[in-house]
Each structure stands twice: as structure tokens, then as C-alpha cells.
Image (cartoon, rainbow, N blue to C red; front, side, top):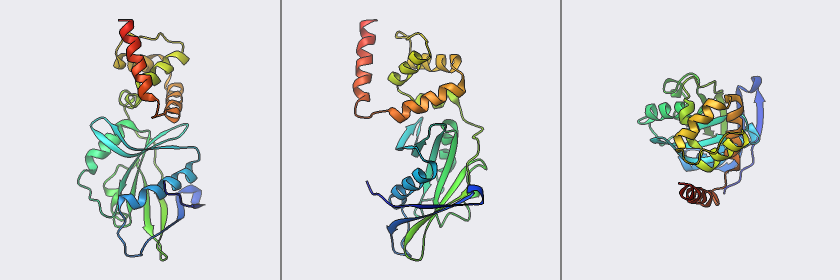
Length: 228
């Protein structure tokens, strides 16, 4: 992992945030996705504090470039580097809107002047550009607002069955071993108030261990067979 050092200056109530990273590039070099990612992650960590970053997270029929989990909210972040076009953005925006509480688009300087025309008004906008010395500067040009098109039935599909089972347990609900994953998702949405459920769900995502989750899913399936 590439580590960079970020100094954050907050101005105008955090509407614009400036960050200069230690990554140095030629002034006239075009920014690609791979140039932006690691510095962006450091910028987000310094801006939001406790976060977990997931890359290339498949949600439904599409894939989010970046998912940022905080204790209170789930963020989707689409990266459009100087080398990217808007060809798929309309479809990507629709998919992000179904799954995430807040959304950002992070863009290279070539898109900064026109990106507002391509994303909804509730999306936040982060721009990244090279300074005179070749380092990367990040600016939050617009903060994200409440996403009015989020669908809870889609968002909860981001949780795996063992995580759903844990939510059943901590909320005192039956285990529903013989029921489908969709049944459990709907039962949690029905029985647990959203303000409680989503905080618990984000904690599950924080604690997810990709090294052990496969074994947990396998054990669940074996237990289900025994009770069939």
C-alpha cells in the first residue's frame, strides 16, 4: 500500500477542503485512476476519521469504484480520472443511488468544470489536480447531501448471511435457518428500526474479515443442511 501524508485545511465550514499529498508527478502528466486512488483514500481518512475503504465492490449489476464505511453512513465514490469519459456515468449514478446513503464523484481537473452537469445535485464532488510542484491537491467542491433514491432492500444485500444472522441474534429475533437470505433481509427491515439497524449493519461491515468469511459461510451452509 502507498502511504501519503495529507494536511487538511478546512475553510468556509468545510465546503472546500485542500489537501496536498506527498505523491509527486510531472505537472503535465495526465492523472489516471491508479494515480488518484491511494492519495484519495488518505484524504478521506483524514477528512472523515474512522473509515473503512472497500474497492471495486459489486452491488447489483454494477461495481462501485470505492465504498467508504463510516460509523453512521455508507458512501459510494465513483472515480473519473482525466483519462475517463462520461460514457457509463448515467448508469453508474443510478446504481450508486440505489445503495449508498451519500455519494461522491472524484474527478481529475479536466472534468471539474462540467461534472455538475452529469451527477445529481445531492452528489458530492471532489476534484484532484496537480500543483506546480507536481503534488496532488484535493478539493471538496460540493458536500454530499441525503440521497433521496436509496432503496433499503438493495442496501441490505451488501451483508452476507453470517452477518445477517448476527443481526438477528443481537436483535432477539429467530434464527430462520430454514428461510432464504431474502426472507431474512426483509424480516430485519420489518422488525428493526432503521436508525438502529443501519448502525449495526455498518459495524458488521467494519468488522468483516475477508480471510475468514468464506469459512463462516461454509459452516452456515453445513448447519443448514443438518437442520433440513
